Image (cartoon, rainbow, N blue to C red; front, side):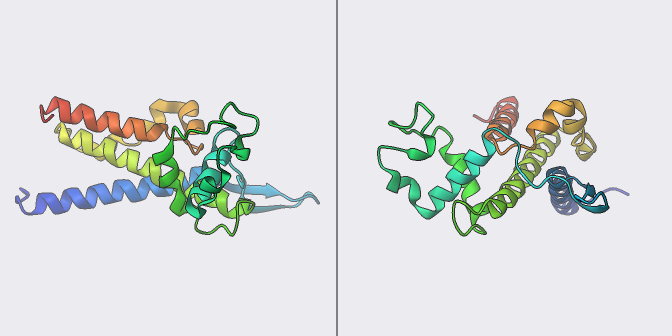
Length: 194
């Protein structure tokens, strides 16, 4: 059956929405890692095995997003005591400002900067949404190049990336934004629409 011109945009919208929702679900599962958890007494139950963020920039990024949301970054003044062990303690400059502003709405559940549980779950949700957007852009770029059944290639992001990619995909870092911008720029340049 030949698809009419009016059905194509609706079909593309549905396909893109499904890619986005499926990826949110997949990366949400990656963030929580459901499975068997062992109690202190040795008994086991089905639960969430990953209740924390990976070590690295993730805790800093989500806390800084919380501080932006509450206005506490501006109160710190010239001595940014949250970075006391860094070269930025006296002359703070946020090189990932837009990413921290992206994370800020995901901190709405936190009562204060010490509410780590709410901040962790907010960061995990932000990571899942960011990678779903990355998958959506990958799908859209493939469609822009005329690739048939572009949604079939989206899982290759994880397959080809392997364990290193999946580990990096569990961190609250800004690099996916660069990949999204690069993919978009590639399509725009290829179509000669500068």
